[in-house]
Length: 286
Ligand SMILES: Cc1cc2nc3c(=O)[nH]c(=O)nc-3n(C[C@H](O)[C@H](O)[C@H](O)COP(=O)(O)OP(=O)(O)OC[C@H]3O[C@@H](n4cnc5c(N)ncnc54)[C@H](O)[C@@H]3O)c2cc1C
Ligand code: FES
Image (cartoon, rainbow, N blue to C red; front, side):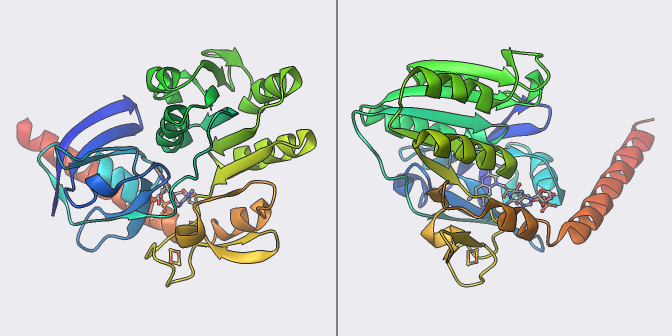
């Protein structure tokens, strides 16, 4: 069992958890993730290791509630436990030095990008970051990303905060102004696809982190299969980071929709049960 030390909301649907995991904490590197289960009969989901404290024996996860399992996790409080937390998994980020690197985060992808940005900065790179989301309430970790960057731009699709527009608008301005050595982009698949298409025109190497569906996270189930430059790779053991110019994004977008009907049904049941539990609790109070 893994005990939740603290929980803090970063936005109405995104929370930061500090969880006791003394065997995982000392081994974490930027780019690693864990596979967790939130309840005994629950599914296994991959979540990025945003940070760790080897002395305290804790790891930091930042999770957006989008379906049954992530919603269930966000119902947990400090002192509660989760049954499984396995890792660190995935290849660590290969680190460059003395380069200019643009780090682009979209939505909760900014949480996955933060440890990479920090590690690239600590390796002596000049970091220009762009953080974007649909609206102001979904912008997370702005202060942390600013601290890890030489310059930071914020964009929102609806213009409610920062510059109105997409992260690619801001990225194009940087690419027109100077020639960075590399771009790192993490966010929704359409965003990573758009960033990769843009940087390809400018000939700038681009790394993306692929949110493929995962089960075991150790290369055995084949669930996370992706096509990279026409060759089959497993995102869990060969990635999750890949050359964005070689990724078949359209295939991955289709594969990630494979279980939508079951995910929607599971989400519906969970939401109904919880609405029911909340209703019963309020009747007891009355
Ligand atoms: C290496 C890796 C690291 C990740 N790190 C984080 C993280 O730090 N924080 C975070 O909040 N999420 C992260 N994710 C995504 C997270 O695993 C999914 O959000 C989660 O599995 C959804 O489970 P669910 O039951 O709540 O939703 P589901 O009901 O399974 O899905 C709800 C919706 O989200 C889509 N979806 C499901 N799984 C994924 C997925 N793996 N990637 C993208 N979309 C998905 C579905 O198609 C569906 O539309 C990561 C994924 C990977 C592969
Ligand atoms: S998650 Fe099973 S092979 Fe990658």
